[in-house]
Amino acid sequence: MLLTEIDHVAIAVRDLEAAIDYYQRAFGAEVEHREIVENDGVEEALLKVAESYIQLLTPTRDDSPVARAIDKRGEGLHHVGYRVDDCAAALAAMIAAGATPIDKAPRPGSRNTTVAFIHPKGSFGTLIELVQESGPAH
Ligand code: CO
View 1 (cartoon, rainbow, N blue to C red):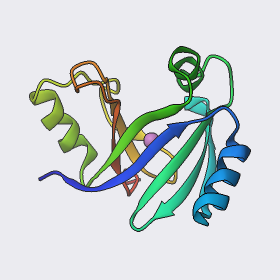
View 2: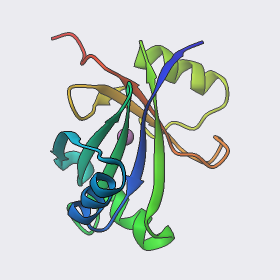
View 3: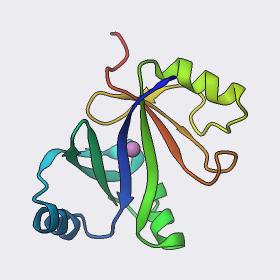
């Protein structure tokens, strides 16, 4: 089994502050990490749940993929991040199983992770992100 944990469930929202406030009031959730990822045009807030995260995600610019997703489908579940020990090996296994990769090779993600996205088409309608917690060796 290549997956070691559900890394995060990512939820696209229009108003990040309002979403954080809601999760805080409803669950007592606290923001463990917050980051703007310029390449992806998103700001994220990670709320820790055991060894996993809820990732609240908002676009930082109109042309970001998350902005387009919200325009098209509204707010809500955007992708599921599966934690793996070796992102490249998991990506290769997915491609061998017939998946359509968005990232042809692993790339840097937030909080020093290494990630690769898989297109929902061919994966039963779910945008999948493979997440390796350590960054590539320097
Ligand atoms: Co993610």
